Image 1: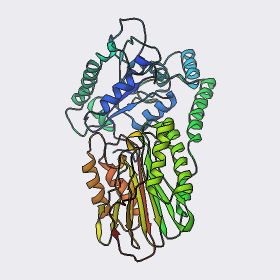
Image 2: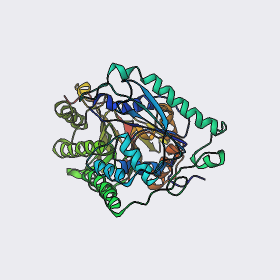
Image 3: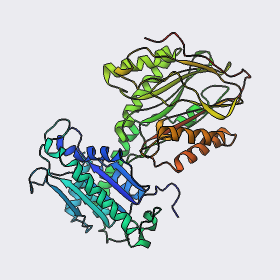
Image 4: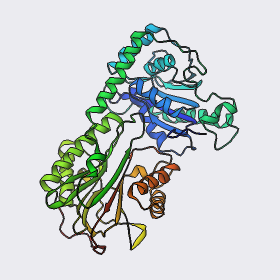
Length: 471
């Protein structure tokens, strides 16, 4: 039986790349292609271009029965564009090699060989681990990759398919085969420390270096962590109950690019935002933190018009690049009257539950393109009035869609889950998260924020999008 909070993973395909270094970034580009394709349940496709301790943490979290690693590695043994496929020898490397790799990883060097050396030493790889690598032709700084490697994409994808097909054959064609059943089908369930490989005992120096690397990565995350939101939101404004949760996804499990926030404003009003930026891990967390700070500043200075606030963010993205292509929904709520005005830059439509729509209905009409030059035109906003005990669910796309679930199907699943959920706001949000993610093969961060009025008796009514638009 799968342990709680453990991902069901029978195979992990991970890519390694160095951003901005032409062919050496090839593995990340291949992962981007693979993530657009349909794969059976239990197959996880991820970019592993990060510090080796974080990769080890991710491997221990997923416990994959099979691992396939892809990337470009300069070995100068074959002509550029040569593809090599080999099974990884899990024999622990010499302590001196591990020592060197840990030191270089701490200094910021991230590549396939460093991760393999450390994983072999600490036992982080399953017995069934395969590397598919290509000899680069251009290792200079720059975007994109050479024409030589462009011809290698399809052959590399075919090799990945062949490796994953072997997983299905070993499973006897069972569609529900996963990492925890692998040993029953003749494959190692994980091959972690003490299971299949005799792992070398690290010296105290290596322990110290690994600890330093882990603390270094954690410190980078802490820079972008910001104040705790749950405690902050619990007392954001009288007459409003707020329950929110963010669930990052990927190697950087502490923080991602999705967030929610609430900013108390003059007159008892409350500015509420849900948004997400592209990317994962430290970089996404940094961009998210900066954009969140910008939204807070604009809300205090000019938060009376959601459309104008989003337009300010457009200008910010245009002039600085901060938040470009981010998706944001900003809502201004007056708890005493129930009036809620909102504008959306590519955000998901709010889901409203009230006495007129106890099973839930999506309200939209103020949506537009993500932040940036495309949204440089006018931004519209929409107004509705909530009743006492009305509930609105604000969320990001990671809750309702993935590479294998369409947005439309995910939205309907969310509506049904919310409409049939428990009465309490905490219980409702927990129920929605469990229902929507239980059958969703997640491949993105997600965010959910429940908003409920706790007083007032105004009738719910919707207005057409306002004619006045922010320019």
